[in-house]
Image (cartoon, rainbow, N blue to C red; front, side, top):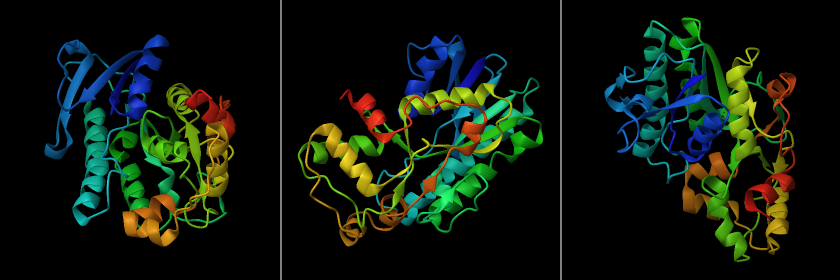
Amino acid sequence: MKVLVSGSHGLVGSALIPFLSSGGHEPFRLVRTPPSGERSDRVASWDPAKGQMDLSPVAALDAAVHLAGENIAAGRWTPAQKDRIRHSRVQGTRLLAETLARQSAKPKVLVCASAVGYYGDRGSELLHEGSEAGYGFLPDVCREWEGATKPAAECGIRVVHLRIGLVLSPAGGALAKMLTPFKLGVGGKIGSGEQYMSWIALDDLVAVIHHALIHKSLAGPVNAVAPHPVSNLEFTKTLGKVLKRPTLAPLPAFAARLMFGEMADALLLASARAEPRQLQRSGYQFRFPTLESALRHVLGR
């Protein structure tokens, strides 16, 4: 397959490109500034803020994977940062969907990143793809983000919304930020520790994207999470066990809110207990279904 990938230099995209290449597919990057030294026929350019996209340098596409967007956890959610998060995801997705819909040879599938943040703070409720959206900034962004693919779906492109959980990798994301304090023995639970964390190993996420590309039965929302979500306390204890370090330094909820503001409630204290119902029904077999096995793999422990 000829696959266009946005966000190809991010945590997930950087792993996806070689995965696709090694599997015999032809990945093409969608970038703002084409890197020097890369073949021009492997790169397409866009500027989501200006509504500009040029797919002419790349051959007719079979599929597209959309991973680009402002980092949700890059800093405190000031009004300006919230605007950047919303616009980067909604405008960029709509631009890509509209452009793909106009192609004379349309791709058969668009796999678009979303997030389990769609569900909001739901306590111990078991969440599947048919569960209602939550309330607040992040669920609102996810609803608009997913809705922005409508032009592609309306022209017959199969659209998959991957609602991605916490991606486990030492190369980036939340786990990378946790490693230093945990290795120093000053890691601990956040808030009560009772909030559920839906997670997935990076290797599984890359394989899930490929699975979504080739399995025609998958369309609409798909929870890209491992089958065993855990509480924050269990996550903390398991990470400490794998690193062989104590986990006796909790971060109280009030301190998290002082440090991160609104983002603390949405990303650190919110509870999302999601299950990968659609993936399992489609036959996907997780390489790392349990947290300890995933952490030992990604951390080489």
